[in-house]
Image 1 (cartoon, rainbow, N blue to C red):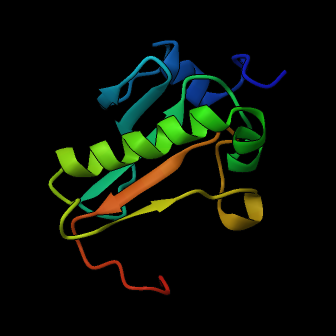
Image 2: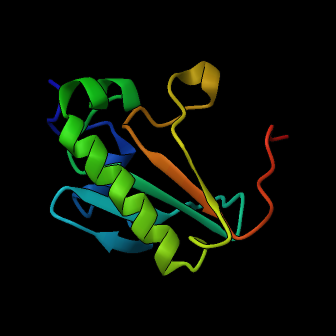
Image 3: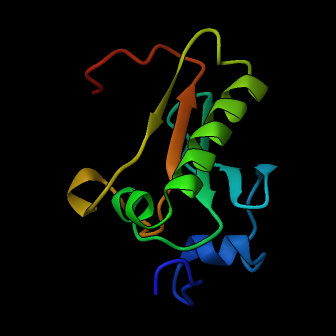
Amino acid sequence: MAGEPQADCLFCKIVAGEVPATVVRETETTLAFRDINPQAPTHVLVIPKAHYADAAALAAGAPQLAADMLREAGEVAADDKTAESGYRIVFNTGSGAGQTVFHAHAHVLGGRGLEWPPG
């Protein structure tokens, strides 16, 4: 069921404290932690504490929680001093788009040039 912790979900285990992570911010509804394979000097994942499979499911099922994640992404960028130079917020939705953990999450990337298109 949407919102309920999933026993086989890596990010639900991080929220529960069963798997370690380098947490940089935490609110009542979100958790932000450093990516273990950073693609930029700032590469932080912002996740909802409640389980939703992807960004579309989150937006449909809990729009306020999606807004909480976006607000926290901005706070992460400010904390890492990338807000003024620019940062990117990326939601990969589906395996074809590179989603490997099926718990909604936003990648906050900054601290280097992030021209578009990536690659």
